Image (cartoon, rainbow over all chains, first blue to last red; front, side, top):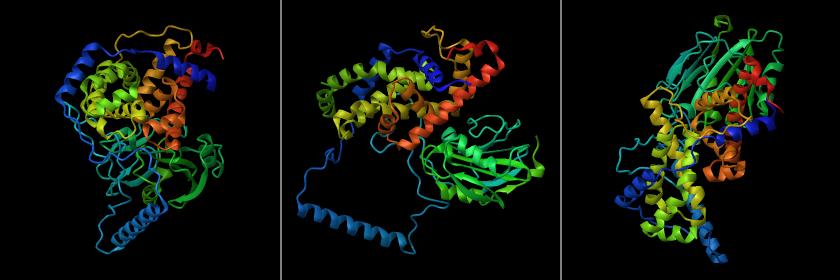
Length: 268
Length: 183
């Protein structure tokens, strides 16, 4: 087993490999593009730090915020409001607010990828290997497992021993993963706890298709957004990976509510 | 000096921007190569970054944050390159001949395993891993640079590290020669 210090040295050596110089032709080409590209004008460039405000200014600002929040609340709660997308919370952009993705290059540039939109669960997937079926977004693509899962709690994206269901656009950034294995000598109550302990995630009880287990409580950590349950002598892992944060625990709960565990159908 | 150049460039001074691009070019290229593992794609990502930075520079609020802001644009350009790669080809492109550090830390087997495992990491994990192990940034700095929560940065690094460690350990189990790594 590689210890931590050893791994850090190996990782640094691995990262040290490769070029560290930008070719002059690339720089010159880039600057030629710059010359042909107009700058976006900042419509309103707010100062980085808020200027000191007197008490009346603060009161006025607070009043504006209260009125705005109230108006937003009334609008949001009104029966005609259509702000909430089907199936979950509003989508979160994959891009940071400040620097938009590169857009206007005179040379062919990649078409901009839309941010993830929380998709409704209108499709389904049945695993031929792991004995589980569940509802999925219909447009997501599937990559069924072709090997037996060895039980590691954090398989890689694309590993052959897990079922993978991924967003067709964001792929490695947004996916569901399922796997199961016989518990053998492991205790069915202890197994979910051991999986989450290996990931250093705080466990929280849950039930999936009548089977009890645990889910990571700190759902903002992508390695903790996984449920581990046991049923019929098998341990199941169901994982959501969303590095952009648009798919939350509520959405994952809706997925879990559709899960049908069929340990008798699993193939080892 | 950089701040003065940024302020000039924000007001449309192309010469000032060219100086900034020359100062940052090598750094951007080094990071892009480490994320993308492909020199041609890294050059494309850097070119897109430079043009996008010029376009959007007037919207940068704090000129002192130019370096981090530039890294953030670069990372998103790398994400776009990786998405384009996945759409157009399934083949794995190997890094062309580049200077390879020859030392006893990284065996050939380790290197191959790491290369394969790294290419399978999601783009966001690659970026955090490169920022940490190449640029030597700590997690709070990475989180601030990439504009992501600290927990997310921590999670991405944890996940990437676990994947790469598993690859090395799997190799060590199958190849006795790699098990001789000194502690």
